[in-house]
Length: 140
Image (tube, rainbow, N blue to C red):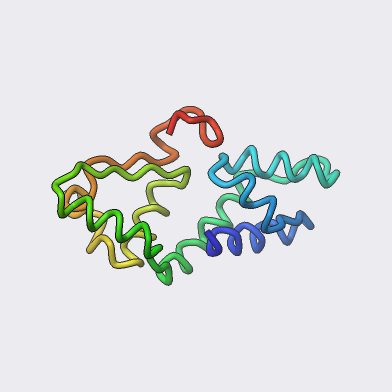
């Protein structure tokens, strides 16, 4: 999550939009358009900047930094134990599939983003592209 916060802050800085840590975590997983529009409205940045430009800048920053992602130890322990017990494991994220897979590869959880590599670890992967209503809606 800190990597995502950093990317958001860098992408929003040229528009003088502040994204504090507490606000970031309160909005975690929301679609980019909602985040940009809410922050712009709250900070009286009118008209709101282009969501497309900000999202693109954020994605460019993430592509570089996600390679440094490290797995969250408790999550890895649960994943490892579940797999040992033969349990079906799914991953659900408000992030894009590209970002989720890059994070998993960067953390060493996946070897690559091939279907077979993903299926070795997860029975299902749900990302922002798979839902109509993003977080905080429970659809994911």
